[in-house]
Length: 334
Picture (cartoon, rainbow, N blue to C red):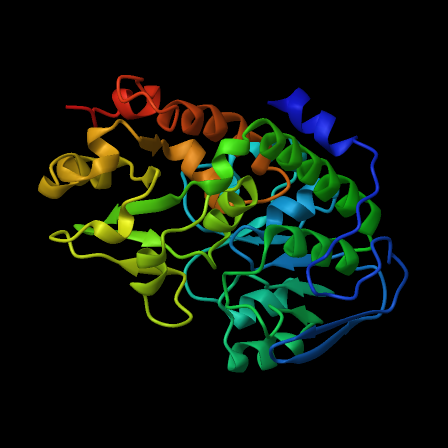
């Protein structure tokens, strides 16, 4: 994994982003101005003490060689909440791990000169308090709290810390890799995929605005219309009745379930009536793959694609007899 990440980080390509943001790819000079849903933030100079409140944002900072003084803990039993794909970039650094509700006083005590909160769920009231401590960057107005595309999260972080060129190299390398996958899988362009879960006894799935389906869409795999329609406006996921799993039906169903959730998924009666199950078109994302897929960062995506693409290939090869190893290992086959 270390060699793979090193190869991605040292890739040297130039990419022109088209995400609706008029941002120079190599805009590393300061000051930098960021327009977002709560107003405007100006970063006057290259920051030295960065607090990362985004649940996955520390990955990109570490990829750029920037080691935050504090990171937001999301989930996973790993040191400081940093998952394996980012441990090499972390090195011996020991950031403060921020858990639970935000403690504004605790953040202020760290004397940050930049606070990154693109995927943090920060409220306007919290933003006002945080921006009084240091320049604070939150999502652009056109995105929800957790729907900013992975490319924009990376390039925005790169601009904020004066590492636009590194950000462009990393994003460009991933874009090239995605393009190669698309080129070698033309049949995927007419297929659908649901990123589904089983949580607290209830099945559900992520809508197309979520970063996980966004990645699959880039590969050609669209989110089922019924799943998009099953959630409230603006929500990034939908809970589904266990008595009607139709919104989750797709050419490939990718289950995100581990531990107790996996045990519940196994015994969910109507799952075995799904066409995706009957025809062997289910993929089980284990804990590490589900994490890499969910983080969708410049460090996690190489691992996610390495593991996920071969599983999808097996699931939608058109032969119901083909075994998908992760699904078999999880005990989801009949």
